Image (cartoon, rainbow, N blue to C red; front, side, top):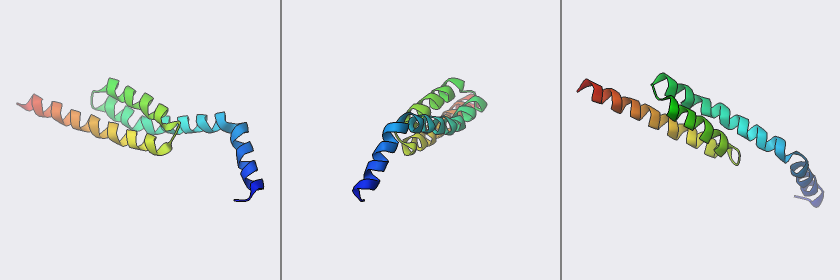
Amino acid sequence: MDPQTMQQVQQFWVQYWYYIFAALFVIGLILGLIPFFIGRRRGQPTLGLAALIVTGVVGTPSIILSLLSCVIFTVIIILRGQKRSGNADE
């Protein structure tokens, strides 16, 4: 990368870093809505709310971490729901 392009990229980050992090946070919150609504539907609203908050915060530095936490929380909510329904049948 030539020095002029590198300088333009640096200026962009310096001027707009807060917009970039805000956008990443919002993307994380949008991804966090998936486990949030699944948790509410499966009777685990506290875990769903925790997933929403964690996915939003973790999404600020990286969208990949946000996606990963979304998947992990969704799996946990589904497995806990199956475990509870399995115990209720016994």
